[in-house]
Image (cartoon, rainbow, N blue to C red):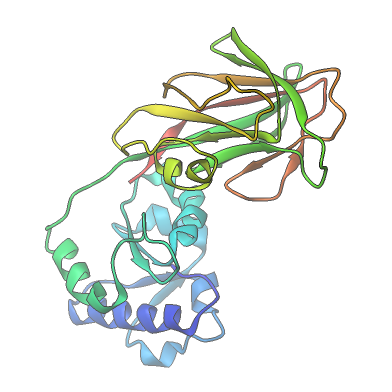
Length: 264
């Protein structure tokens, strides 16, 4: 799997495809990747093209070419199948996509010969509820972010963890991050770096208007509930993994907890 962007992405796709063909294994590519404008399929000896939704179901290994963002993009399609994902880094960061392009063929052969370690990363699920009705639902490998959108006003909200009041806060928002996401936006907000093996959720306030508000690390099995206070003056928004933001109204609740699936 690869995403549109640099020419270097398609160069790595072709190199990886040739390695798989040389090893007499079946190469499968999703439709979106096969249709990348810079990819010339005549350079690839043999390839099966399928819908992206089938990749996780029929593959034993998925190779994602791009940056960490490409893996985050792939996580939603792949997590429920528990298929292992190998990232080849063609972006700026490489926390997840840690295989360098010039060693992709060598590393891929190592993995296909059984020389690898599996790493299981948990995901977050978020729900916006109004009463018992779920208005919006999404998932994230890195983080769920409550923010003020285009407004310069702070958000006035209350937070509960497992049904217990934690605080009422005035701030620019809140970042709820997984251990994987602790090195992403949460790090910029002053949050701690959490080892990927930890079963924990990190809650990082964004520019809180108080001297005592600090990041909080809670159990990975906790459920976070956020309610917008009636004195709030702006329109809070919620985004999972930097995707399109959804409004959170005063009579709604935002719930964040661990997703039942993991990314391998």
